[in-house]
Length: 447
View 1: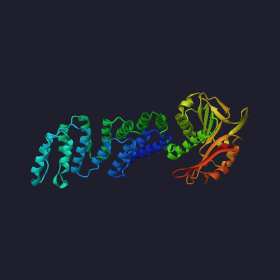
View 2: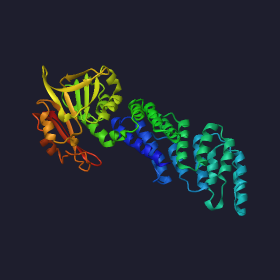
View 3: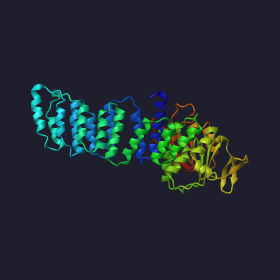
View 4: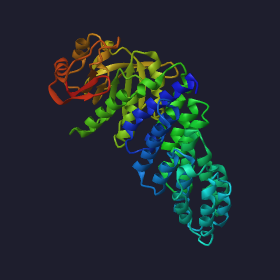
C-alpha cells in the first residue's frame, strides 16, 4: 500500500473513532473501523490478526463454526489442516460419502511398513457415510508418518460434498495464503452460512476497502452502510474544498468534547433552547451533532461565528438543510471580540452583519437563548471578551490544558481555574473530561 493511500486510511480511522462516540449503538461504525485497521496495519503477526478477527466475531454472537475455523487457520502443519478440515466438514455435512477417499491414501507418502495397515483400515470405512470416521482414521496417524498433498485431499472431498457453494468457499479459504484475503474469504463463508447484519457489513467493508479507488468512494459507502448522511456531508466538503483537512474536526478529542457538552446540556433541568449562538464555531460540527443526538430539540435560529473566512462555507455545507430552510442556520465570518450589542425588547442582543445573495446588507439584532463556545483556549484577552457577554446570558464554555499548541493562548490547569475565569450569577455545571493528550474543562451557567 502506497504512502498516500495509507494516509487516507489513517484519516478514515480517525473519523470513525470520533463517530463511534456519536453512535455507540451503531456496530457498523466499529465494524468498518476494524476492517480498516486490519486491512492497513503491517505491525501485527498473522496469528494476532486472526485472533483479533475471531474475537470481533465472537463479540457479536457465538457462531458454531468460529472455533473450528480459528483452529483450522492456526494449524501449523498440513496434517493438522487435514484433520481440522475434516472436523469442519463433519460439522457442516453429515451425508458425506468416504468411499472414494480411500483413493486419497494412495497418493500419500507413507512408510512401507504402515501402508498395508492404513489401507486396510481405510477400506473398512467404505460402508460408513459419516465423515467422523474419516476424522478418527486421521487422528490415529502420527505427523511423522504422512506428508499429505493438501490440494489433492480437497479435490477428493470436493467429489463427495453435495453443497458445492459452501465447499467451494471452504476450499478457496484453505488454499489462500494471503492473510487479509483469508479473512475476506472467512466472511464470505460466514455470510453463506448465517444471516447476520454485522457480518454482512464487515464483509462489505473488506470488499470495498480492497477495491477502493478514492476516499470519496469510502465516504459514500459509509453513508449507505450507516444510513446517515453525515459521511456524505464529509464527502461533499472534500469535493468542494479539497485543500482543507477536515479530519481534525472529527478527531476523538473534538467529538468526545462536543458529545460531552450535548449530553450534559440535555441532563440539566432547563427549558430546551429555541435559539443558539455558536462562537468560534469552526465547521459548526456542534450543530450537526445536536441534530444527531437531540433530534427532538426544535431550534428556530442558529448562528455560527468564526474569524476564519473558510469556515462559513464549510459550516453551511455540513448544515445545508438548516441553511436552506430560510437561514435556520447561518454561518458568519466575524471576530467575536469585536461583537457589537444593542438593546431589544428581550434584552441585550448581539448585532450580526448579514448579507443575502442579492447583496442586501443589514444587522440582525436578535437575542439567543444559549451561547456556546467550545474553543475558549483560542481567545486572546479572554477576560475582556467574557466581560462583554451580556449579564444573565446562558452560556456553555469549554477550554483545555493543551498548552503545547501555538494557537492555544488561554489554556487553564484545572476546573477551579476555569471557574475563576468565568464568574457567573448562577452556575449549573462544572467538570473535566480526561482525553488522550489533554483534559477538557467545561462550565455551564448564567453569566
